Image 1 (tube, rainbow, N blue to C red):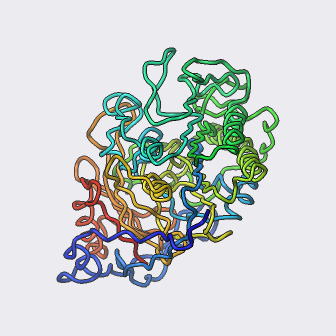
Image 2 (cartoon, helix red, strand yellow; image 1 turned 90 degrees about the vertical axis):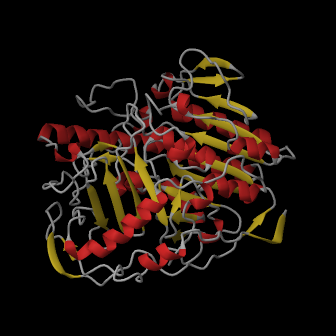
Length: 518
C-alpha cells in the first residue's frame, strides 16, 4: 500500500567547505580549467585532430535539487545482474529496452568504482567501496570470497526488516569448490552456482538446500527457471521480498566451440542464438585499436598491437557476447511477465545492471579493470512505482549505492556504514555530477592498488603507483584519447582533482562524498 507522504529525502553534503570553494573557482586561482581542444574526427576509425578551444568547465558545480519519489511501504526489491556486460551491448537487448528502460529510468552514468567481478558484487552487498569491504580483486591476497567478510550484509538487514531474501546464480569467485563449508547469513533462499561449473554454460551446478546439484540446462535458462519459480512462490506470501538474480552471461566460459578464436576467451551462447549475429562487426570508433597510446602512462597493454588475425578473433568474441545476451534478454522479459501475471509488478522495484563493463579492442584492451569509461561506466536501469517511465537520468549512480537505496526503500538499517547513498531522490533530478572515488588492484592478488582516482562528471583523474597520472575530459574527448595530465592549460583543474583525490581516496562512510551537483 502506498503512503503518499513517505518521500525520499536528499543526502547531506560532506565535502569540506574549503575543498568545495577551491574546486568551484575560488581559492587563489585554482578555478576553471583553461580552454582545451575539441576533438573531431574526419572519418570513422581515424585518429582525431584538434579544433577550436572549448568553453570552460569547472570541476564541481552548484548543488542539484532532489526530486522526492513516493514509494510503497516495504516494496519488493529485485536486482538482476549480468556478468561483464558493456553499455554498448544494451542496444542488442530489445526486451530490456521495452520492459525495463521503456517503463523506467536509464541511468546514463552508472559506475563501477572498481570494475571487476568480486569487488563490484561485494559493493552491491555492502554499500561500501572495495577498500572498505576488503575484497579488492579476484584471487590471491585480497581476492575472492575468502577476502570478504559476509557478516552484516544488506540481506541480513532486510531480513531484520521483515523481508524474505533470495539469491540465485553467481556469487563471489571461489565460494564453492567441490564442497560447501559455509552459507552466508541473511538468506532465506540460497542457490548459488558452484565454481568452477559456474562457467560451464551447458552443465552448470547449483547449491540447492545445502547440496550440489548437476543440471544439463543452459545456464541462463536454469537461472531464469529458478528465479521465476521463486517469484511465483512469493505471490501468496504476506512478506515483502528481495531477490538477487546473477546471470553468468556474457562472461567467458565453456564448453569450447569450433569457431572460438585462439588465445581469446569467449562466452557460450544458447544453441538457438548461435550465429544470429554473425554479421556483427567491431565498432570503428576512434578508441578502437588506438593508434597512438603513448600518453597512456599506467597501462602497459594499451600499447599492444593487434594483427588482423587477432582482430578477427575479437570480432568473434564480440559476436558471441551479444549472442549470449539474447537469452538474458528473454529472461528479463519473462521475469517482468511473471511479476505482472502474479500481481506483484506494481509493488516491485527492478534494477538491471552489470558488475563491470568490458573492452573488446577499445584502447587496445580486452577485458576489464581499468578506468576508461568502456569498463567503469556500466549498464544500469531501474523501473518501479513512482519513477517516470522511459526517461534517462544523468545523475551518477555507483554499485555501492544500491544497498543503501534498497535499505531506505525497505525501512531497514544497514549493519555497516555505507559509502554509497540512497539515490532515489536523484533519479528524476537535475543532478549531473558527483565525486566518485575509483580504484583497481592486481587481478592475481595484492593490496597495493594499481591506480586510484576520482571521476567527477566529464573528468577522470587517476594516479598510479609511481606518481604518474592520467587526466581525461569527455566533454571534448568522448573516447578518452588525450591524456591531459601534463597539459599546462589544465594545471588548475588537475590541482582541483588532485585535492579531491587526496581527500577521498581513504574515505569511509560519512566521510565519502555525497553531494550531487548540476
